[in-house]
Length: 148
Ligand code: UDP
Ligand code: MG
Picture 1 (cartoon, rainbow, N blue to C red):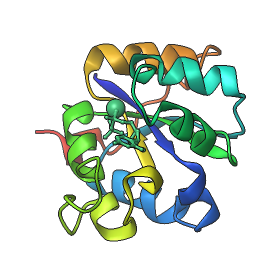
Picture 2: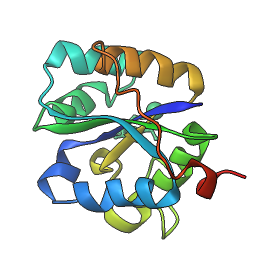
Picture 3: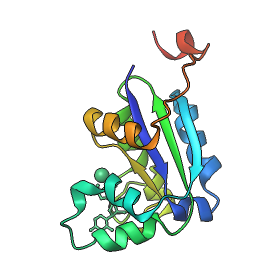
Picture 4: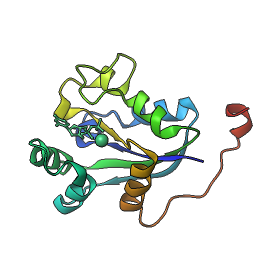
């Protein structure tokens, strides 16, 4: 089953959006496989966003991610990477549809509350980076009520 890495960024934690965000993924039917509250160091944030290191907003992005604790999660389900991105909404909250997390809870691109892996391959890398200890191997008993 497909997995994705979802991170509630420091603004989402500070603003008390953790429960609301987790509820959206839970209610959709995805399964929580890993969860922790962590403060990451600069070098770790730089590694997570290594693909964006040449961008003009890179330093500000790294400062943002290390500005407070984040919630790191692994969610599992059919097409969870793509669907997770849809639940999150467009990168710039000015363009995120209402009903998406960014559309409902964010205004500025540099305070857009949440991260989600953009491909199955990125998800694999990000889960390995954030959860080197591995995730929890459990199966929900709701499986037959969610999948046909
Ligand atoms: N970002 C920013 N300014 C930009 C583009 C991106 O501050 O012009 C930040 C924003 O927080 C975004 C993150 O950098 O979520 C990573 O950018 P990416 O293009 O990967 O967007 P995402 O995958 O998060 O939608
Ligand atoms: Mg991205």
